[in-house]
View 1 (cartoon, rainbow, N blue to C red):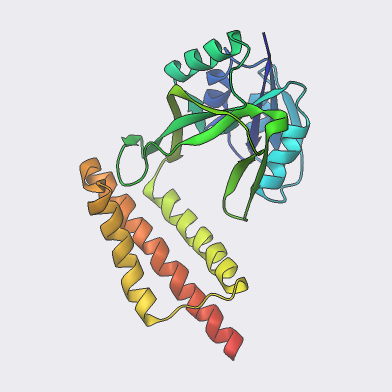
View 2 (cartoon, rainbow, N blue to C red):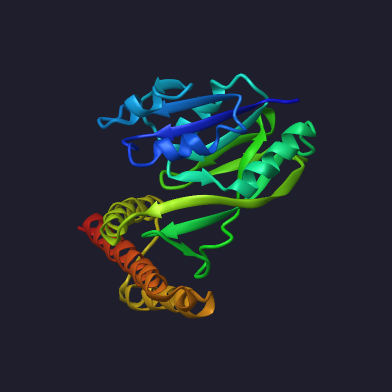
Length: 254
């Protein structure tokens, strides 16, 4: 039977890391937690489990995950964020593949996102498919400062597994709003570096289009109150992104 190395990167994840570690116990043959020098109880909680806990400076999501993957001893890597869990159905699907010796190079999961404790199944939030289990030689993380993506080698065989990867994204609306402010800063700077422009037309229309797309076209209305909150906050992110970009454009001209 082939073995699995589980990788989790952390920074101040005392609220999440225990449940994440508990969810991988049945499939993990080793667990690596790569931490960016947390100041809370993340390390203390990890040390109550049989894990390898390593601290490493954070240089970006892709860089941190590639560093962590390089520590793994086994051919197959299962990569989770601290706020993610394996559902019981997904655990069983992974165990079946493991017992079969793995029949693919990479495995795709549906990810079910939770917002303030509610499962969100519309508005573009589900199935939110992710590759999180793969043969070490068949994939590597890449991406920008905001988002990382696993890039597979040419010809790599991919298979979808049953069950959901559970993602507890935001525990409060305030947490979401704080992230929107931070990420809109980063996105505006990235757009500015690429020479992109903003203006009144984009500032007025793109947030409205974003809201309409999530709330109506993608069915966010079916998620009730929190579906509405997500659509409004997503529109707000778009508004901030383009107003901040316009501000950067003006500073460059000045």
